[in-house]
Length: 455
Ligand code: SAH
Image 1 (cartoon, rainbow, N blue to C red):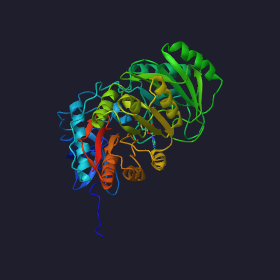
Image 2: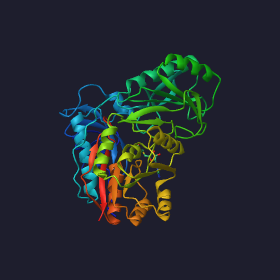
Image 3: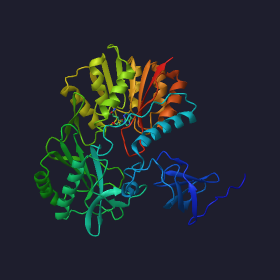
Image 4: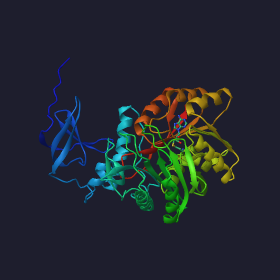
């Protein structure tokens, strides 16, 4: 085998032009063919960079001086946000973010030899302050309970109070809660020593209702929390519900299954279009509420329901998609792996007076074969899986059931491209352009919708 030598050394400084942006929004410099990934560097910019790390096939560098500036760069100091990792594209002008996302999908499709038109990205109505949910880590810094964000690829907490892409009322509530817990000397959990009480502060706020849910994730319910509950209720007049989530395990998973409702009903209500939805702490809910109706409208338009369809809403969450379309179809069957979300979905059907939607707890890949053997005949399948995409066995079952129409809502174009190839192997063809919908401005995350039909 030919011996490959890394053409740069750690600690070396070099001057180069940034050639590309990775899917994570990092600039790419190439030395011969060896790529160096650089934060806060845009294509076309000439930079002097310090090589900070080298691996066999790629390395990392840090800009020490920017010699030219891209016309797509946002003027101003967004470095805090960039380094914390909450808004890796904040330095890129919004139209360029939209073009970047369309190009990413095109690139991933081309790599899989998929010949699919990718439409220009649909802009988000709000480009900052759009997130309706926060899960804020805490640490003791200089003896004080501190809230902030983990720096990219680390558990190093960067103190921050303006989260830029979050609902500003949520930002205020986090500071209020932090100050109360400081006053009561509630300690931050330390991952190394496994001592301390508070792990995360989670806040959700209804975009249209303004209802507020606060969840304190704690290792144990210490006595000070009783007073904290009273003080939080007094200081947050818009509080709808307050919970403790007791998580004593040594894990990166934020919430345990152990919720203790301290005040209010244990959920908040928000609306999408003219539907109302109960949202429990464990349940998934789209985080960009102003853009969600547009995403669902595209899925609905692509599905082109005639009124007689039986629809499977796999990855149903709290039923938002299925309950939105229910009046336009004969029957909706949903499945979802999180039991609390299924409980929400059932409650939400009732809340909206919908009687033709049923929900089952379980993974899509386990439930679908059961429905197949029960003889369920579906006309349309909607999938909206997490980033890892759908299981290969699930696609095989879809093919065996000969479900004629599939609407694929994706939050990760890499797994989408992989799954579209697998659907093709089952006799499906993509019959729509891919609609890219920006649900996550200032971040590299990409949401899209694609239709397939059985040939
Ligand atoms: N369609 C919903 C939820 C989409 S998020 C909405 O628009 O709000 C994806 C959902 O899939 C989450 O609720 C998650 O809990 C669920 N999920 C994850 N893996 C799953 C699996 N293997 N089978 C079924 N549901 C799954």
